[in-house]
Amino acid sequence: MKQHVAAAFFVLTALLPVAGAQSGAPALSRARAHQGVISTEEDHGDLTAEIRFGRALAARILGQYKLSADDKTGGYVSRVGAGLVAMSGRPEIRFHFGVIESNEINAYACPGGYVFITKGALSLMSGEAQLAGVISHEIAHINRKHVVRALKIHGGGGSFASGIAAMIGGTSDSSRVILGSLMDRGMDLLFKDGLSIADEFDSDADAQENMVAAGYSPAEYRRYLQKISDAGPGKTTSILSKTHPPLAGRIERLKQREGRLGENARN
Amino acid sequence: MVLSLTLLFVLSSGADGRVMHIKSLFASPLSEPRVGAQRTINLSRGTKVSVVTTQDPWVRIRFAAGTGWVLNAVLSDSPPGKTSSLLDSGADVSLNARKRVSGFTSAAAARGLREGADDFSGSKFRPDFESVRNMEGGYVNPDDGYAYILNGRTR
Image (cartoon, rainbow over all chains, first blue to last red; front, side, top):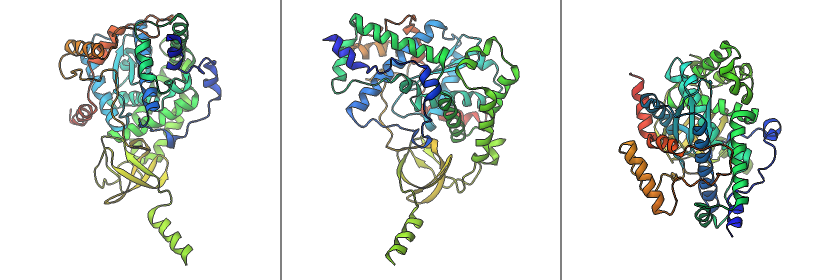
């Protein structure tokens, strides 16, 4: 019985290579990007599945990298992050922000609202607007459910609530293997394979809009990416360069969009 | 004649007509689609508006008092949903982190969710849920966060 419930918990059409998401995924329509609706029982099941998966993925990240004990910096990042969520986060989920002990220049978004930024990324920033740009990019990944879509995570229908109860505290061997494999693929997506190029470009564009809505200059986000680019390839950008499109293309697109946002956006 | 009237109506009310909702805490439509243009009015979260036209990334919306331009990012197809979280069910997030963590544990236990249970234990990656709880303990309400970044303009 538990096996059936487990199978219903996550619909695993997901066991396809992640590489498919990297190269062939069609660009999502920007106009459809900002969903924030929990209107049916199935939607609610999907949301619960998303949060449970995202929280467990966040726990894996924190199993690899220590959460910074610097409460002052962590609190600051959380306050800025929450302010950005106020302007364009999905209202139906709580966002949590953490700083991790890593010299890598990167940030990570887990489904369900868990956002991480490395100490290495923070150390390269020259102002709050640059932090806002990076956090906004991660919020956009969560808003657009990029990881959820890449892994095809959703609830299993009407019996979802009882499914959750049955899953907690003891899963069958087979469901443990399936869910464990899904988790491993989530980690690979964040640290090895990356999301699709279209997903990254869309998140960059959303980041600019979110920055404007919150009163930051979007040009600061571009300047930050330029700084990373100027620093050149190195050990601290190895994950970023593996999982994201080349910086030159991102910077060029950001510049073009600044023009569409208005001349003041370049300041 | 009928065709002309229809055309006139479509042009005056906006060719798009989609109904959308303000998703952000508030939105201040601008008189023109550019950063720095004059703000018209403050619309609160959940306000229903209709789309007049789009000029990516800007959207011209119609609301009760007139029209104005906002960014795509602040709009949603449907009304903002109620917040859902594993930290729901009355966990007190307003006190210190230690108390918040125990609040979450109690709330989860009350709903039959055993905190610390890991549905994904088949993963080859080791989880650290205690650190997740610490991170959740630092939750900041979006309204407070927005007030903070507003104050930051004068910091």
